[in-house]
Image 1: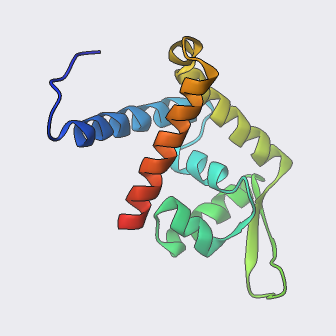
Image 2 (image 1 turned 90 degrees about the horizontal axis):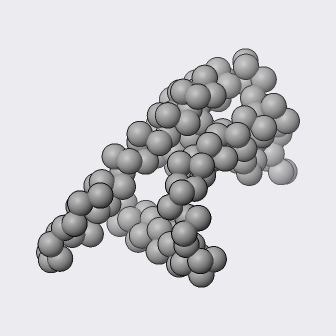
Length: 144
């Protein structure tokens, strides 16, 4: 890792490096499990049952594209569509037991990518990192 001069633009540059590193980590982890990064993202987004529209918002993707992705994942027995609460027109997408295991394996693989770094961290530092990343994510969501 190289040192950077402190100053204007440092955070955006760090976020750019993080985005590239995350893309690479997602690609490595998904390939290891014979998934595309999009399939892995869908499985993670569906850890809590959600309607297609909510999945599309979480994945920042067009609803029709998510619907096709859900159809392909359903054909592989990773997801089910079930009637929603009250409104029969709203179908919830939920993971099958196989889909849940695959999502958990993917998340464990991603977590292993930072295991060496995190092993030197205190529990407090890890909580702080999670809080900061969540705060940044929320701020960026609020802008969009």
